[in-house]
Amino acid sequence: MLGTKLICIEGIPGSGKSSTAQFISRMFGQLSFPHKWWYEEELGHPVYVFTDAASAQQTVNDLSGGNYRDVIVRALRRWEQFAEHVAASEEIIIIDGCLLGYLTWSLFPYNVPEDEIMDYVKEVEVIIRGLNPCLIYFYQDDLRAALSSIIQRRGSDAEKHMLDRVSQSKYGKTHGLSGFDGMVTYWEDYRAIMESLYDSLHIHKLRIENHRGDWMDYYRRIMEFLGIEAEEALPHSDPSLQRFAGSYRFTDASGFVQICTVQWDSGQLIVDGLPQVWTHTALLPKPNQDVFDVASLPFQVRFLVDPDNDNIQLHMSGPALLDGAAECMAVKM
Image 1 (cartoon, helix red, strand yellow):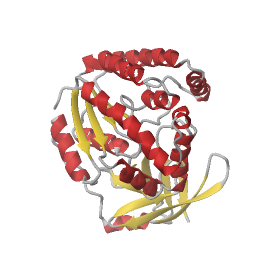
Image 2: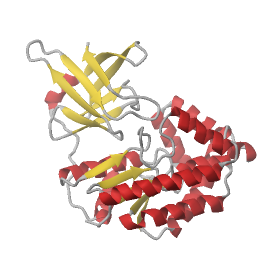
Image 3: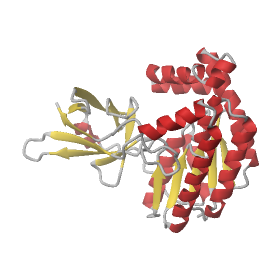
Image 4: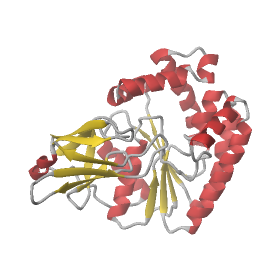
């Protein structure tokens, strides 16, 4: 395998970063490689300058008040601490949306000059150089089509969030960006910076144009790039798993009763309505047949069957995210 301690996966929102990070994590699990995947929205992420709501608000205040250089200094300090920890660990670390994303996504909408964004990332490159990092970067030639596909997949709430993010940003207001066309222009402008950064970085790197959605080919290329040999398990098509399909009832963090569903679709289980989980999300089987990874997320689902009465419980576990916990226990109705 390529002798790296740090794998960075980058691309615009919805381009497949987290799915790929999870794929690599599952491969490393098969090979018994010590590793840790830090999901980009995970609370306590070791690279982020904020650790809670108060520090996140302070970061926003600094950026909106023009004190972005203070934020950059704090971010570089976090990268230094992170690099020291990783160097001393036996684990390979996988991070998505952190090197070309994360802080650059925060600096760009506040109209921070491009050269200062570039300088920040180059300083990060120097800090992590001893980890022999490698970069996997997804891009799309037709960004308009890619954004349309992302919105269609994630739904109307995600569309509103993405549109508001552009139109309400300082960059969007300065350049008169609004609506879908404005969002396309925003991400085209940002992509130009990402492309320049990619070209300037002197690390192991792989660039993949992924508009076709041929993930078997992309993953094959990634495995070849990393120098690993493993087989990703196909979705489990054991018909007996259909017994887990149905509606489940749980109580959310606010004390309200909610309903989630599990469907058997084309030989795999699909969930809708679980907290912090996108709609129509697949469950990926682990070696233990009653345990599944939630696709693209750092969560696991376990089904527990009472042998006396065949009652079924769905338990979801995983780390808390920046906007809330994902722990859930639901009972089949």
